[in-house]
Image (cartoon, rainbow, N blue to C red; front, side):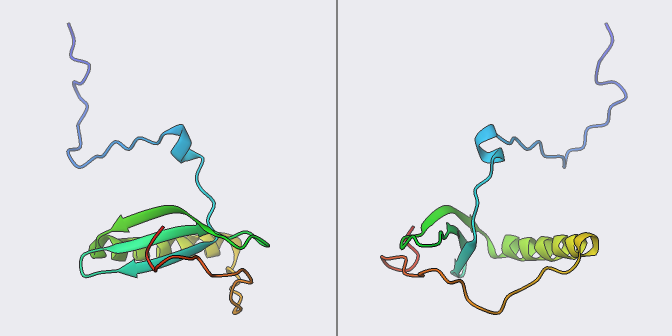
Length: 109
């Protein structure tokens, strides 16, 4: 009986990532609010809709400061690649024209 894994090198640093159908659909967000402490960064992804006075936090991600810096670098790299392919991303200087009263205290979702 032959060993099916013969000749295959396993990478001990390889991570198998599972993506469920629900998560794969994604969640639309057009605003992110970031807070931090000495040990973590909290990123709230929010969906603002025109004419709707209430905005909902759709997802909250909590990461370490080290991971926040890695995320920043990865975003910078991907934005650079995007702009090389599709041209510069236009940035408007005006603030969103949605009501920004989220209610409650800062940091609550």
